[in-house]
Image 1: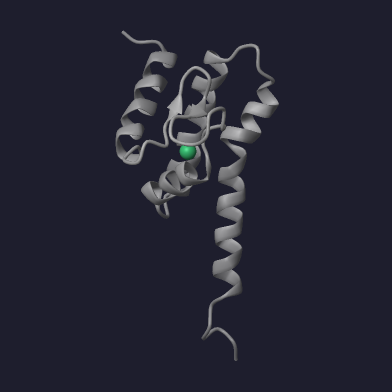
Image 2: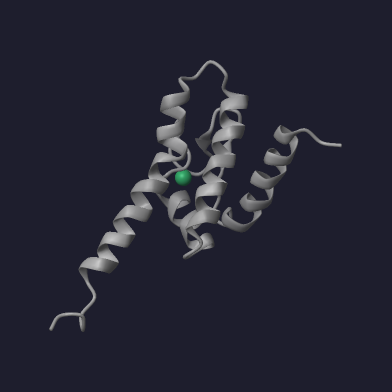
Length: 113
Ligand SMILES: [Zn+2]
C-alpha cells in the first residue's frame, strides 16, 4: 500500500537514474541542480535536454513526467508559489514541444511545390 506521493517520488527516482549521468539532478527538497552553480534551479538547461531526449517523440510521457515532478515539488515545497513552481518545472516542456514542433513544420524541404 503506497500513497500517490510515494509512488510519484519513486517514479521521479527511477527517471533520475536514466538522466543523471552527468549529475544534473535536483537537490531535494530545494530543487536546485546538483551540478550547476550553487542555487541554480532544476531542471536546468542540460537537465531539460536530457529529459527531452529520454522521452524522444513521446510528448505525452514527457508531459506526464513533468506533471509528476511538479506534484512532488509542490509536496516538498509547500511555502513556494505553486504558479512559479509550475512555470519552472512544467513550463519548459510546453516551450520545448512548441519550439520543436514549429521548427519541424518550418523546415520541411520537399513540401514546397
Ligand atoms: Zn544543472
